[in-house]
Figure 1 (tube, rainbow, N blue to C red):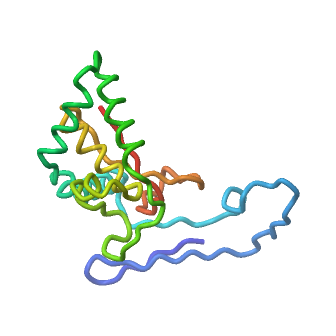
Figure 2: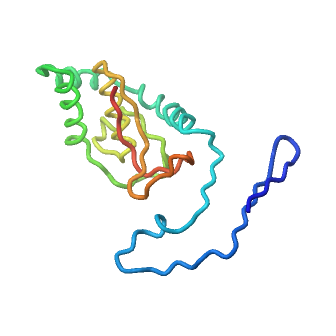
Figure 3: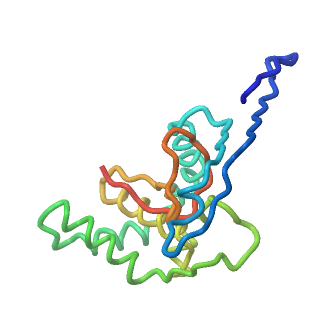
Length: 175
């Protein structure tokens, strides 16, 4: 049962009441509880585009921290590339192989989604997924591509109808 109580200032209180829910009995080789149990997902985010724009705006200042040395590296990496795909692969493999993935951020100044400036990741040669993704985006942009940092959730499936900013990995999209 769902009820809405309207309050002042365009606010409301949402209430859900569930009764007589059958008990779940685990079985051998059963899928995760998240896939079989009834659940209520609530989000105050209006749509996925809002999350996408928010993350892009969080990352943009850090993507702009590209240095002349980074541009020189892009030029060297793509010098012999014959196709766009070759250029993308050369830059991708450089970040994948030369920038160490840390797994956990070693400091407390950037927990969550915000990457470090790409200059730091490039110079330190390490970072977590969001740092490596931001660096790859910046290098691809320096090569003339339109690229974007993308948040994804590895593991549990997302409900496409409930936009919420709870992700656990960052990757890159190239137009």
